Length: 110
Image (cartoon, rainbow, N blue to C red; front, side, top):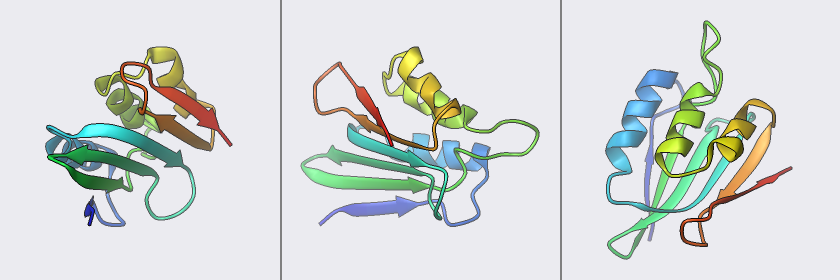
């Protein structure tokens, strides 16, 4: 059974980033889905101590005053995604980041 954590449907960018950074400690990433539709725009799937962990964030791809997906970019970089792949959050509506190959995250657009 997966542990599911979310920031609620009204998260702002800074609060969502803080929420994510607190929860992701010790979690091995498996996959991240980013989309610009739906309640949660940043969906993180990982494992910790043999358990599945799901972190859902509503505010990382939005923001007033031009922040847009800047927080998503920062979190992807924190997780080891190369800058050129993390940069894709600014240009695409739907992305899938795959961490299944160690030290070589990949991205798929749709």
